[in-house]
Image (cartoon, rainbow, N blue to C red; front, top):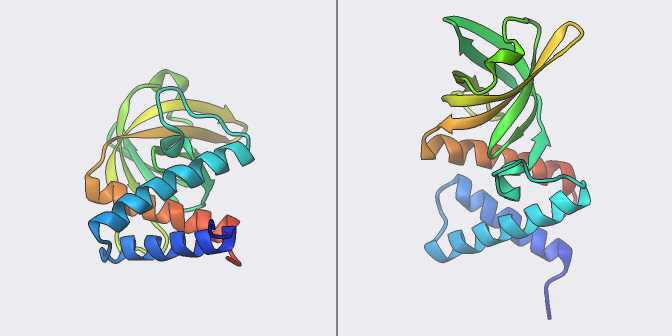
Length: 170
């Protein structure tokens, strides 16, 4: 008999905690990756989202998460807040307007503060879109040059938020 949804989520949560402490066996790692794909498919369908062009649903899935982000562009630091963070990138709002639509496709350095983490996640990202909205500018960024370790840290923060948002009582 298949496990109940609550049992499945508890198992997933246990595996997720092991990932964060690097206590996962190779077999558990494969189980965790398969479970991530399965849960992502469900969530993408439930929230009626679609995969960004060229990205798998797992890399397209973003979750609402407000945290501090800094972009460096033209030797200036631009500090803002994320609106959503995902395994493939993030969306953020900035008060400044020096990022303009012509910057689409440019690579910028970023620093992303992750909840519960001591140091920020650092890397390079490609500007996917820039949308001026009243006094703020919304920037969507896809990770470009990010270490495997940093990707794992971001992924853990995203899955922490997914579990906290959708499965609090499981």
